[in-house]
Image 1 (cartoon, rainbow over the protein chains, first blue to last red):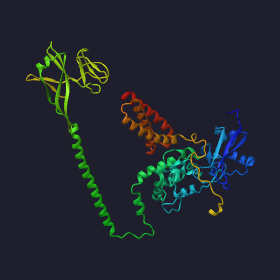
Image 2 (image 1 turned 90 degrees about the horizontal axis):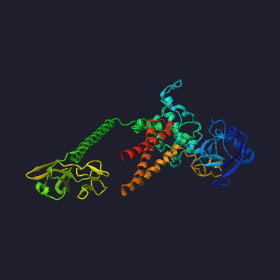
Image 3 (image 1 turned 90 degrees about the vertical axis):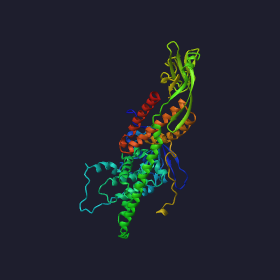
Length: 419
Length: 113
């Protein structure tokens, strides 16, 4: 890069001739540039106008990035022609296009009327709250001055409005520049039009979709996004009651409100508010009771019953090592009752005269396991889980051994505690 | 004033019109906005698919991914909206939260699920 000081560069410049009309087109100009880093886009435009096409129209004034006249879209990004250097634009072809959202007068020149209309709507003027002989000072170290920061540096070049897609979709949107200006005055404690200004800003500040395009393109490094977010937070704090405050300010034309009405109005308001309050309390109370009664049953620990599996002797006589016996009982879960008809696997150890009753529910996902007499394993058909005769997992996905029922023998019958 | 203008103005251009640099000029903040909208639609599609075609790991991952992506972008907006993070850190926030989102995604997918 240090070797290459300059060279040939191609520029595609948007052209629109109002005498001919139409949609406009791009003209291509090739220039020999001595030093890329010593040549601004504005220099390029001067040279094109001088050397190649005298009819090229563009706007400029100060040439030092302080007037905001030469805003345009350079390689797809808004910026000032006088501030952008050819060397910083790394493309072979540099495209120059007029600003978005403004009617094109000719070539790169746009009509800024819509911009200043929105700017005006944002009330960009200061109205002192008090009549003072000396100018009131906002000290540099105060919080409000720091909040305003460099936001007053705006030169109204229109780059931010051009970059903001929401300025296109929402026609009433004050836009980044207007809201930025609005914020500098909203944060100013000396301002006398605070409520009116806030109301105007709140009308449109929620059209911001946090795209940060305005912040990216601002040639003065202002962040209108920050300003808009500041207004959002101010609206949260001061927005409630804003409409009341605005209407309550005595207008010079308005007649003073009749005296006797005021207490009656406040009484009416008191009554209506008490009614709303009582309604809310009643609603919460009734709603709470309904909710509690509706969900409390689900939290109740279900009562467990002993379920009979039939005479123990008969079970001991059944063939094989494991007897599968169907237990029938009613299961209550909250309001929901269902009839259970499920197999209980009773492992019989005839030598020691002991039994173990297993829940046939597989500990993986709840399928019913069955006893395979040939393999001497409990098998689950769903995902291939297998268990040893003592219920311990042999293979497959089950995380735990089979559950065991509590058992007791009563009057010769085998009972298991339901689960 | 109006009578001075003998010629017609061209109607305003807007973003991307006659602009070959449209995609290149789109910056992080704009992408974040755009992708959050796209991911919202993707969530809608994947959620419906997830409810109709249950227990498909690929589909579940797609849903989880779009949800975490959407959540990351939403968190960024919330943090900036409430002034908890200064707007100047919006790009760092995007990168940091994306990493956080991927970590959470990995924890949920490999650890919990």
